[in-house]
Length: 263
Image 1 (cartoon, one colour):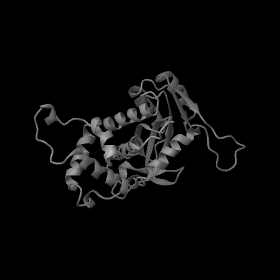
Image 2 (cartoon, one colour):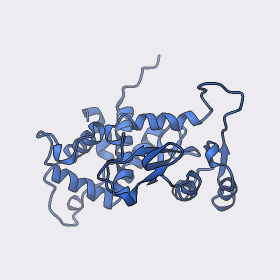
Image 3 (cartoon, helix red, strand yellow):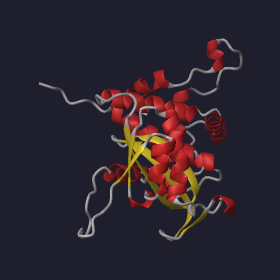
Image 4 (cartoon, helix red, strand yellow):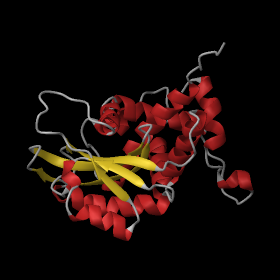
């Protein structure tokens, strides 16, 4: 992280218990070094044991990663950053509309056979990332499943979780894979309007569809992180955490970017 990014990130980090007077030992490495190590791993796709020597030891970094994962701190840190990015962009801290889609990726060889499946539509043996993003392309929620899970079945669970966490969300755009009973379920169960954006029959070649390009750009941004080109994680929870870590890198760079001066 640059100094400008650290100035933005530092107030958003959770405060350790020993600093609050709740006991415990001080941490041996500062949070900036730990965050740099995890960001390096996500961005470059290295193994845990291949951590460079100028970063903290890999086992300490992995323990930090697991601790944040088990206490859901990575999602809390991500949500604080997302609200800050939205406010600096002149938007409300919570979004009222979003876009849903799914992405199938191949799984690594160390992933267990029970945590991956075969997507017959994309011909991919691996896992599937179901995401909901806001109108700025920022992540609202992610759910990783085996690749043979249908989009509508996963969306029913994901949209229920998203509306419970984001009470202002009232409209979600989706593609033709989410038609059918899911539209009626969203309206009746979670008071959510699911708008289907379809491709017309007279379209030829590549055409940018309204609102759907937002989530497609999001998937393209994920592919810039080499750790996410494939799903190398053994557990589903770690696979979801890697998506959150990748988005924190994007948001810190966006916030720390110098703003153009206004006349």
